[in-house]
Length: 416
Image (cartoon, rainbow, N blue to C red; front, top):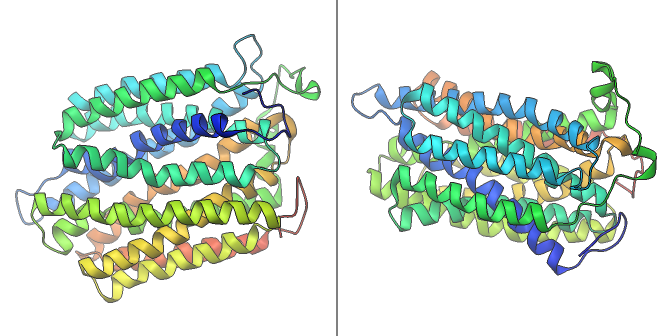
């Protein structure tokens, strides 16, 4: 299964890589979509449900900030890790185990403070593991980056289905749900980290500088193309999170469903969304690999996502939500698949792949975790959900258009 840089990898590599990301996304998104809102829901009085929305948003945002710090730091350290155990594997294992322990802590946590502290541990662990696994794309692939990026983005959608579906259909509840997530990550994440190849650093990166200034550590952020990619990716992911992150509250208090009906309908919407994310990510990733063109996919997929969000502004109902979920899936699946491939094409420094891909991961995960906080404020401002979806649509389109600021500069292939 060994895969030196530039070589093509086979089905075994892709299977392990996809399973790793399925586990990562499942444990990150299931608490966000279902378990944390259930833990912090406060429906006791007329204004109580808004307090629950705000508490959920704050907890998720704090976790997002922690992930922002952890991902590039862990990525940079893994770039300079040397030893017989590899440079990515120790960090992948450490992140998996930290997130596993923190999920177990979430199972017994209560109140915004307790949930918040445990969620920070999950976010940091996921960020560290994600930085290590994402670096494998740049380390080992050249002509299959779109396909590998499609595995990452399709696993994101499948992860929501796996997590929410199992918990809702088996009626596991919050505590058992968290413990099931912890066990899944521990087994699958550990196996993938151990079995995926982790080749030594290239010769030009074999001697690491012992002292690096802060300016050197964030050098990639001064690369204009790379900075525009990150800004667009952050903006589009905030837009996506506004469209999807508070769906349970939308069903409960926007469409006035009871708890059991809301959970069932949430699962239905997630299934529709997932189907279109998976198809769009795989198709667009492979086409972009063959054509060498990334930017048109990235821009127009974000526009589709933005238009989907506005459907819920005009006609808030379960039927319109299903149509919006399908279009959101098409837009987001294509955007995340080709966008990550574009990010690997634009990496400015060969010796810092994991660090700089950490920024790419952070721009997506921070958007997903800041979205509920921003959305909570928008919901509280108008006492409903129309402004939430309107702003989500605007941000999605704006983030996609930012991609046009990237120059037509070749890295490992055309990105125009």
